Length: 351
Ligand SMILES: *Cc1c(COP(=O)(O)O)cnc(C)c1O
Image (cartoon, rainbow, N blue to C red; front, side, top):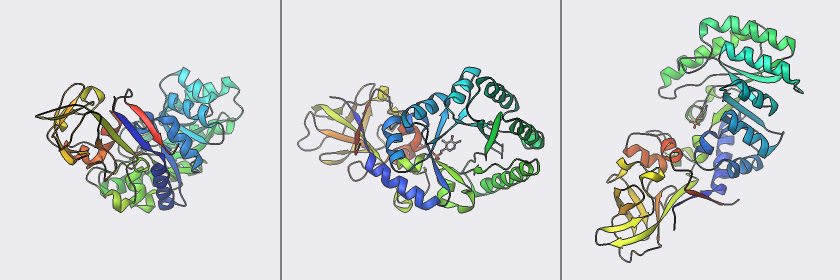
């Protein structure tokens, strides 16, 4: 008897429909980093493709190549973390769209593209830094970078497919400042003859709340999986719901409660002990202790070995969503979802 994460792909499809309706006419890039936020990459991307998703945000090249191998050539796959020349070569061969925010990397990509005799120019999305100071071309370098991309594009090595940035979504004021920066980047690149057809800036929160942030494409992960923002709008208001429920079987029952087969080694933060309720056959009960490989739940009448306890996920079975759990220890739902051990089996409904 083991814990498992039950992923409801029909609920996922419903969330995708809500995302699409919300952001139209912008397109939705489904972000699938960290094994599709812990839900399992392949079933998620297959269903998304069947639901009409045509852009996938992979983060790293390995994930990007896995998406390409699974879905074939009629989708766009975006990767923005390139660690080595080998990875660049793999990404070029898999015809990934590449996010580039560094002058040296741009030269490496152009050089690899020239040496691979790819069927088409490598599609590059220039990442501009609009205040987050993660990777991204700094504002003082925009004119020079724009001129260089224009030259490489004329030579046929690359095609500038996109211009993008990432924003904090922590405050409207910061996001407004970032968007002003993005607008000036668009102007500077255009003046250099680079008109990137796909401009993208927003992730889940800004894409839902702020139409002017949508541009041509939005990169949404969390809300598609039904993971709302910690401290943000409710799932009901967003019209999304969690697509995964973590269930653990009862392995023993004693006077102090019921032990379930899920512990800190499975990725459950031990600081959750005493802070959350879990869904038992007798109703919500306190999660009292978290040990290495099991946890103790307050008892209920008729508790018996083999019964299932919902640790977090979709209501009404689980009292808390991943984000609800996260809020009790001041973190975010994505962290709860992605730290669940890959050894916990994922099972799919609606596959
Ligand atoms: C993770 C990520 C996203 C998706 O963010 P969500 O809040 O999960 O929608 C978008 N863009 C980038 C660059 C990311 O790393």
